[in-house]
Image 1 (cartoon, one colour):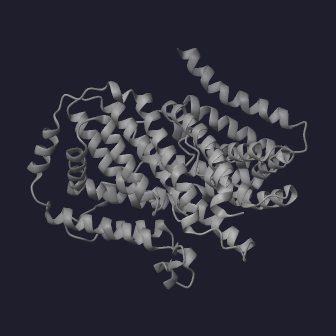
Image 2 (cartoon, helix red, strand yellow; image 1 turned 45 degrees about the vertical axis):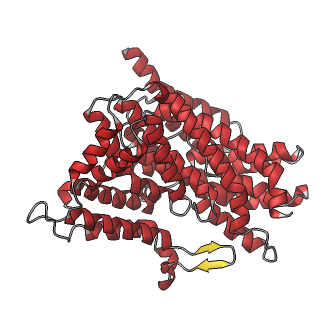
Image 3 (cartoon, one colour; image 1 turned 90 degrees about the vertical axis):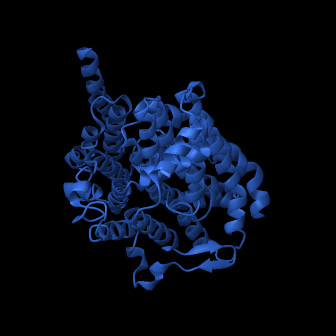
Length: 487
């Protein structure tokens, strides 16, 4: 057993050396260094040779030591603004927990969808899917995390397969949020980056609007969401779990809570205001209608992010008096001492790897591989693009992946003499895939922090979701995008 453990630990540095050695015979030394780091980190993450937070320190150590960039640059990635969104979101969740509003929300959901794990999973995924169509995927997960946690605790109280149910609900929450964001132009930053890039380079074109994107992307997202639901059900064997508690139990428990307390009302109001501010921060374009976001009130609207909103609203909770416990506030620093440092390190390592990919040129080298497809059938080209973008998105940020790929795809479309949309749309949708690793997306990282998910669960489910996503995106875009976008 000890030997097996040491073998798992040794496998990471061994593959690091092999990768480094293979690249040493090429002209891509810097890229090879970064590839070797990514292989080591990914290996330890996938086989869980050591605790994930410990593995998350490797990019901070290895990127400067191998001369890719300095420690100051790498360290700044470990405190990216998204991590403050994570912090603020968890503080809001702690306030929900302290006021007991999370338990009320959980029992309300359970009283409506019943006691079947499949129904509960479906209900949570449906809610996450539709909210994330209009709001940040990360913010969506942060909003629902406390309620889902409370649902899991209800099953734990009765010792009802809570590990399997908890793992399925958390993965379902994260994946549904990422998939739902694909459906609209405003659902995820990658879609908005593509929309901006297209409008900048094709000023006289008007075939790409909110409605046309929705006609193509929503069916893809909906089908992928359904497949994901069934894959999760099968993986966790939810169809075999029999719950002895009757649905009336949850209805009765909900009634016993009584009416809303003052603290619950205020925390609920804070949450609704936060959701509204997240939703209305950026401009919302629907067809010819444009709703200007409140960030336009500031001289530099790009300086204000979802993380700004999260920290602002969380900070307010430290100053509002609580009635449940006299002399306290709705949130205290004592409540926040349980902020998961390990998950923050996991976040940071993902951003550090993405920065390393960018600065070493590894992302550029991988993206340049798209040119190798230029003699193939267009459907094979689209498949190749989706596979490569999905692979990059597992390690680098989705935003960085699509920012890098779009100019290359535009040049490729010119050389192939085919419409740019036929390549850029599938690439943009594929950038929202990346379900195998905890660091692939922020929603993945957040739910992994629940402690209910094992890495092997994530990559076994995520592998099939990625495969189905790639096939759906490639086929739907090839067969239907030209009719929808009239190119």
